[in-house]
Length: 196
Image (cartoon, rainbow, N blue to C red; front, side, top):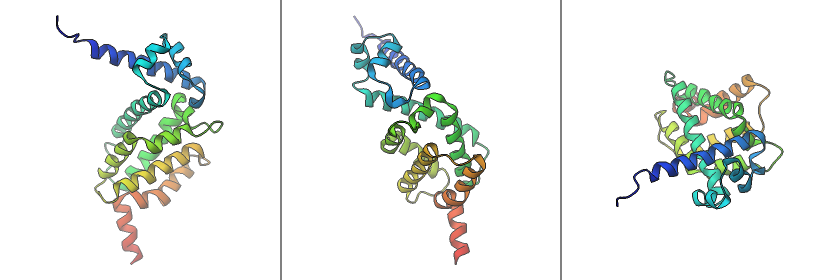
């Protein structure tokens, strides 16, 4: 008898169902307060089944954040398709990321001020987020110090998610003046030439 050729699809579907159940819980509660028992119950499976797909809460949370990060980056990429100026791409991309997280209750719960900063902790150590931000910055045309610039941009976004500006206009101004000049190549070049 041959191998079960649908096994991988069933595994992916089960994992997605579990992540969807977790997302539903994150819309109602701070992510930090959601436990594995809660997720198993919401997914309609036993804890044993849940642990077969995700060995612990950190692995499940990472899988959820990485899935959503890929989705958000794809949406932002589509939004920025016609924006060619590197400085403007940084500002518009950062603002789009902030809006997408804030507008999605499941994602916003990761940055709730009432709990420990679980979203910040995960974003800081996520290789998926680091890789996607580095790829975004590399697409601007400057490959120097990618890792450092990407870490800076992630930290700025986390800061704005946890401590928002007064409004979109203030956040845009902060990004234009204090972030784009340090992460976008044309803005950095223009400023260094002006200083000479």
